[in-house]
Image 1 (cartoon, protein in one colour):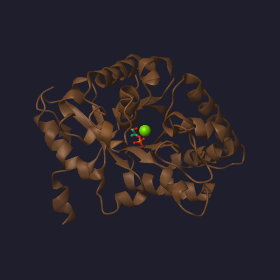
Image 2 (cartoon, rainbow, N blue to C red; image 1 turned 180 degrees about the vertical axis):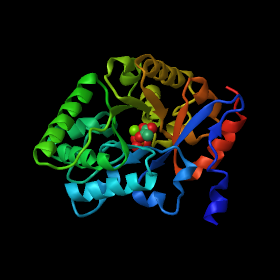
Image 3 (spheres, helix red, strand yellow; image 1 turned 90 degrees about the vertical axis):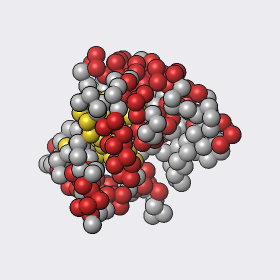
Length: 291
Ligand code: PEP
Ligand code: MG
């Protein structure tokens, strides 16, 4: 049954005019991969690591994190896997970490800002990721980056942890370090970041560009990734990535919205990352697109 279900999904995604599109998976927990054949995708474009921190037992230790990251890399069988460091705050409160009662949590201490404010928590995650990197093609991505100094600070912490692991004789590898582009400032100045790669978070990029929250139904019409302002920021990011010679993908929900596929590919994007249930439909849509 699995073979039949996967038959359509296992084909590569190629546009009507013959362009190969890379299709990656978004997952929120390792269970999302249960029963899935890795051949349906070209890799994993977004692992939301928040699930590790949502469990009631408190913050996860290094071994727990390492084991989970390794399990996901094992599943991918060498395909690239992009893991995002903790993206707490905003719509993702985590007890013991995020600040209660911020007047506007979407504009507060969230994502990379929170990780940099809690270096003891962040360092542990970076160590676990550097150790897991030995077991596959791992890329590490930082959420909610606004300015280049955030990437630079995170890189220094990663460097420190790799040095410490080596000094302790613990196997590790240096994964490429990239950024999510989900704040308009980062899209407008994407070329200023020494990022190993870019991944556009269209959910947050749309809400911050349109000043229309992703979780408020009354402004849902304005929360529109097809708005020319949002598409222009996506195109700018793609251009900056090309100019720097690094990869760029889009991993927000817009990637799975097939009414947007043509517009997204028209920005120059050639990599989309979607939840496993969206793969078959996206590939079928790509096959009909003549961008
Ligand atoms: C996004 O903002 O588009 C994204 C992929 O991240 P999240 O939905 O987890 O904020
Ligand atoms: Mg986001």
